[in-house]
Length: 293
Length: 206
Image 1 (spheres, rainbow over the protein chains, first blue to last red):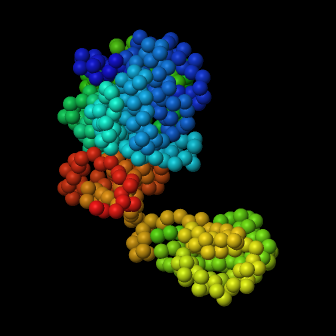
Image 2: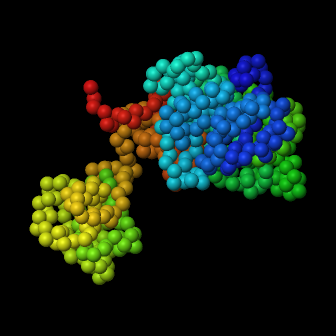
Image 3: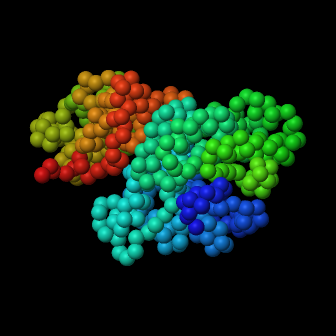
């Protein structure tokens, strides 16, 4: 099902994110999905060589999820493919019955585990969104007609509400909406007040926004994100909270509590939540329960 | 503008087989050539290998000019087993085509250097994309100021105004936004979605 249908129905749309393995054995991932996610969330977003680290492809993983009855969101970045390959993969997604796309520019190749690779960026998130719209109108980017029925997708995009240059991000968000973005998922939020302020400005665009959650696992992880991950800022009091009871943090309870609290504080201001568990998929049911979802 | 960097000493020494004829090109202002480093390396090479000549020429990328300049070395070139060329990639290709029965080796790697014609400061660069965006972007080039050459705004990788690729590099789109903000021209950013035409620099205008 398209996420847009859920938003239109007024549902609070809950999605999770999984990263395919660095290999082709997906049994473990499918088991996690069946055990912790299926039936509890609306759809699963599959990352596209996340952080420029080479892995199993997003499209193949989306198909595998679809085969076990889970709606998938095909994350597609502009880092590794030119416009010919991007258009071709989007048609392939239509063939597999994948109805949701998340269109991103993608991290730079130098950040990943094959830093020697050529960064492509023939298109960017905005022109990618526009291109999907073009395919939906029955033509490729160059205006050549597609054979048969045109594909149709729910087109998603991302935005960083807690970025230190939030005004620049809002300008980009506006460009994405104009290019056809139908919903947004955000970078991880740890400061609800910043998110709420952002939403006051973002609501003018009239598109649903899903709050982004990355479960804080431990002090090392959040410090790393503060130093290195764009758009993420974990405030000092939250770091203290993770430090306070080491056993509780190690067991994942603190991370679950913090995540649920952020969702509770933000949920009246947004239209859904997107949880990036980074391997802690087993914690998602507890977060949803504690957040009252 | 180009910069030529010497290949490693080991690499060059391994190339210097038999009688070696060396050509340096100090021709044009558009190429930065590592003169003192090349001098030193060639002196060392002379002690180890059978170097029959080291000549420094100009504009060897001009085939006719190259032919005239090498005329007086005809004999030495004829008996040489290896020609080592210290120049940009175009120079090496011209020599290799002219002396097409000789083993001609490049001793430098050629890299683009920001700015060109030797008159612009390093921080400005032109990607020669054939579809100038500067009028949209407050005079800051998104092709060269952004690591991903994005033309529709900032990506999610900017942190504290710096690029995800290099913490010492300002985010190009942060610079563009701030400049337009300063000019009271943020509306300029509402331009239609741009898609680059990579065929453009090679197309003839009709």
